[in-house]
Amino acid sequence: MKKICTDCKGNGFIRIPYAQVKEEMWADCETCNSQGEIDDRGPFDLTLQIEMLQKQKEILQSACRRAGKKIKQLEEDCEKLFEENQDMRRKKGTVL
Ligand SMILES: [Zn+2]
Image 1: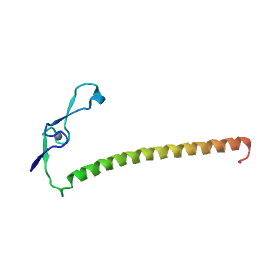
Image 2 (image 1 turned 120 degrees about the horizontal axis):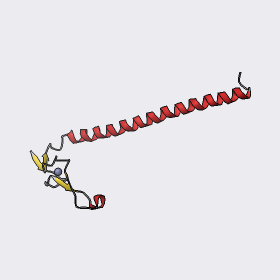
Image 3 (image 1 turned 60 degrees about the vertical axis):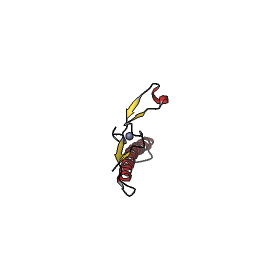
Image 4 (image 1 turned 90 degrees about the vertical axis):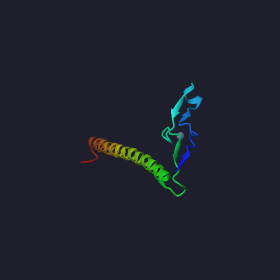
């Protein structure tokens, strides 16, 4: 069963807000793939929820990757500082 796409109201394309582009512009509707209607999968269909969660997962994965990179960087910085500190102590003769 098909139903009218609520994002583009069946047009298959959507108007881009004037504030964003400063000119009259239209874009393909991604929700219905420019078809103007989408499959009505019924209220118990979880496809959309799955898609949403998958997107969320990707966002979280990239956030984790960024955090991991940052941690690695900080660990390296920490090690560098430790060595510099050791070096300075050695020069001062406080460490053998
Ligand atoms: Zn649409």
